[in-house]
Length: 251
Image (tube, rainbow, N blue to C red; front, side):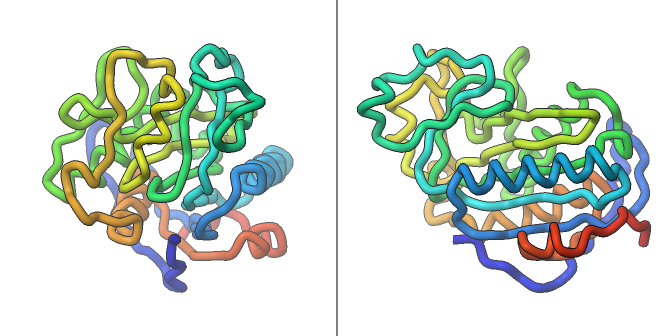
């Protein structure tokens, strides 16, 4: 279960040459704990719709865990499921994100950024690489040299896929996002062909850092995300996100 820390996360501006210069802005950080997939999807859809109507609203990061669930991307084939829908071990959802099939469950840190890319870079490839960079730099704080693989989206460490990424963008507003395997039960990936990739295994941080938990990784990822996107976090509840919308005011 994720713990909510009622404080502001401050992060310095990234100066890497590959990252566009951005100002310091408020971002809303929501840490609802373990949230069922359908509820999280509805919140994302509502937050995206609000920002399509009012592009001045502040950016949001939902950071959470899910109970066990399988999800299929918009164009994914059910041939990558090793079970029939009638005998599925866990709920199965087809979603609007890109990509194939994946598993979400406890021990996996899932991030759903609701961002207005007009403020950053209106390029979907840039955004995907930026999400990968969040994971790569987070793992670097543990001395782990994660990387990308040519032609594949996600983050890899010593041949194991540790993070999956799938997004939807509408009018340059994003939803869906990334899933980092911290310490999940990897056996549940055995019931699918994860991301449609047959020749590369799924792994977790716990394989390289025994005993690591979501609570260990969460603050590092929050800090890294804020640094790369130029955001200073204000922690809010899900209900507060709709009750008190705010503009993306500069600090």
